[in-house]
Length: 126
Image (cartoon, rainbow, N blue to C red; front, side, top):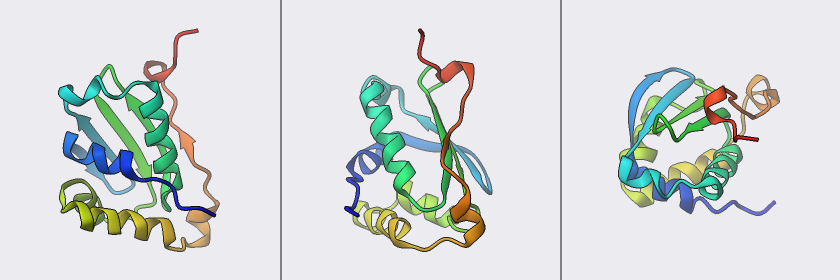
């Protein structure tokens, strides 16, 4: 299996802040200056990169609210890991992301499928 390109997540780091965090769920606010860069293609890349990380169970990007909600395995990804990935040195963040790619999950977490959290606000108009 080839390693995914995590550059989109690393690029996002400087443009988000944690606004709410309980074990298993984190909400990030996206800087308004970066929202214009989050077109549908970029949102798909973020989703794919997050999907590749061990312990990520689901996510939703809500451009209207300027937020990203991520559900994750609280026993696998610690609050300190989020701080490192979002606020730490780029090289440290990259190592943290790489570690999440490579770590084994407990069977209960591994069996949970990734899902894109679905609400009316993140559906594309038909």
